[in-house]
Image (cartoon, rainbow, N blue to C red; front, side, top):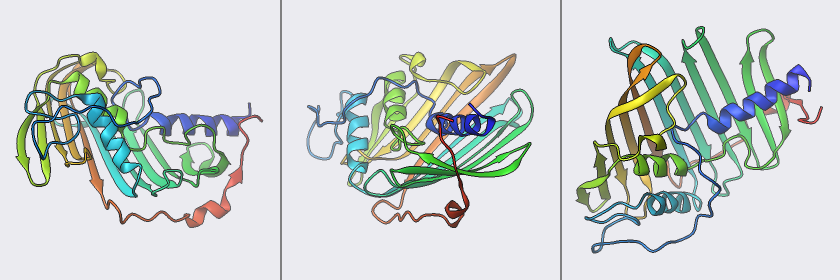
Length: 265
């Protein structure tokens, strides 16, 4: 495999895993399921007595699969003084057909050496185009034929929502015409969280999710303390759903200047 093609493969792997804290489970068909409810106004998988994470996460993914939207996620790892050790920002714009989407991923950190990753990507379901910075050769623009799910394997963050629900004891804190607010401050299975690189032993968790009646998670905040090598750190994750029904996805101008690559070279 050539060096250029290896870079393309690495890029695809980064985008497939850059958005998640949560361990990937086996492939799952998103289908309606029996839902515990306690009257009108509860989202699927939510009642006064319990939250059923697989049902809630599937309802979120199922609803977003029928519309266009923008999803913004942010992750921060900070030390005890508030210094940011790792910063990740990922914005994706998704068309209603789910095969056409575009995004921007930015990350910098200090795990081994100070580094910065900048990736822009676009796919129409047939090809993937990416623009990224490679230190030795400068900016790169490449494209390749789509395989499997494309550059982002979980557009709606279904696995993240399910994993958080299975890791933390969630309950209803507020209920209104717009939906419910779920909160949690106790780990039940912290192994369901896949922590950032070199981060382990999560504890002191705090979670807040805003969920619409159709099961869509419109906002999420996750925070917990952990260890990073010999440091005590704080990890925070934010998720925000925007422009549902009004997001447009157009082919970026830079796509016309990309170089075709083959993963079989």
